[in-house]
Image 1 (cartoon, one colour):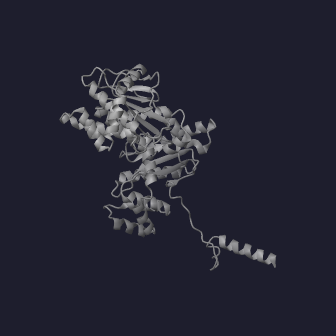
Image 2 (cartoon, rainbow, N blue to C red):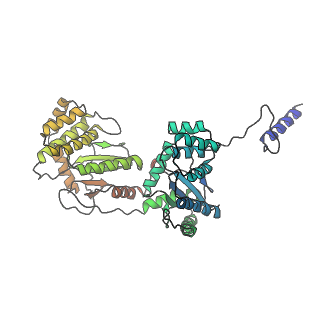
Image 3 (cartoon, rainbow, N blue to C red):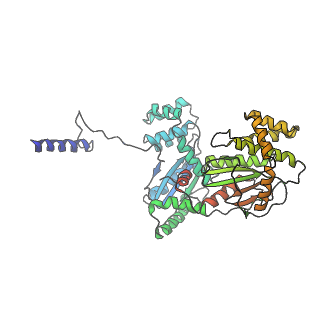
Amino acid sequence: MKRLAIAALVAWSSIALADDAAAPPPKEGHIVRVEHRDPAAAPARGPVDAPVTIELFFVPQVSMSMTRVQAFKLLEQLQAKHPTRVRLVWRVLRQGMISTAALEAQAQGKFFEFLDRIFAERNSLSKDGLFKLAASLGLDTERVAAAIQQDRYAQTFSDNDRRSKRLHLTVNPAVLFNSSPSRASFISSNVQLADLEKSYDEAYARAQDLLEQGVPASELSATFDEKVLASVTPPLPSGGDDEDTHDQMLASPPIGTAGLPSVGDDDATMPIIFLCSPNNTGCQRMIDRALAIQKDIYPDLRLVWGPWFDVGRDDNAELAMFGDAALCAEQLGSGSPPRSSGWLWVETMTKQLGQSRRGRVEPEKRVDAIAKELEVDTRRLAACQAVMAGTTLKFIEKARDSGVRVSPSVIVGGRIYAGLNDANQLQTLIEAELAPGLSDSLREHLGYWPH
């Protein structure tokens, strides 16, 4: 009896797991095949361990020129011509509902059909029109609506945007062959398959070199990323507001950051120190760009502000007062992570001092106004300033001993860059410092995810 029961169970399982065309499953207790797609996985064609990874960064949109659509098709032709050697990955960038709908179409197994229909549209799509298009492809429109409402793919968009910025992509669409831009201008009107073949040949040769060196096929993509970072050459910025600048040099002794206003984790991979005059609005603009770099590209950074100005200036006493007030605000500790209380003070102070150029305000009143805006106890602040009077001037003296001569100066990787005022240069400097050794946590932040 047991043998008969086991045989029946095996027979039923065989029927249930067989292809539908071979034998329909039983009406009750049958097994249904459901295709699973990782909603976070990028749309792609080709094996994951292909020696050449081509990445297309683009925004899916209607009324796209036929020339550009044809360029996309050329990439597909290239992948089809080398199906085992090329993996084509589509990196969707955010722009409205269509981008979200495209990724939801990927989750439902209709990504490429969705793109074909979107590219074929010659008129703008309303929300209802988008849902009608999705329904005509057999997509679950309730899931599409939920994805849009919940912003379900926000992290994917953020990852793709971060990766494009980290690899210095400045055009849209953009194409990478093994982490490097295509030699042919992909957005030009005359791109040909032969041009893309040349980029493929070069990328394949680079992959073969790594494979011969013992790099596993599964690690090729991450290795190419690291080579891009390692190839960065730090620039030599120039242009300060106090005196002539000089080539970058190592701060010796190192400048301590204890007690300075900051944003980011204390145990971050690398601190970036901004040494600025309290009223230097140009430095604040640079800091704002650095905050964007920290947020969008390199989260594992810590930004630090320190007061520095030429003590021979006529307004040195006022600037010293503002510097001491910022250091006291940091000590009083009324901020909330990741921005310290002193960092919030510096942001507000720089903004107000920038506005005050249209009309002078006594420094004591300015400090009180900043304290009021940030809800800082003025009595505690005044008591701290009395104790810490002269702290800013002592800090400036130590910074001069370390080699700082100009305001603003930025310290990256322990090196002083006098007059740095270009965000692209700052990003390059950061990459040059990070390239020799990336921590596992930073790898994840920087976008080293499986293709």
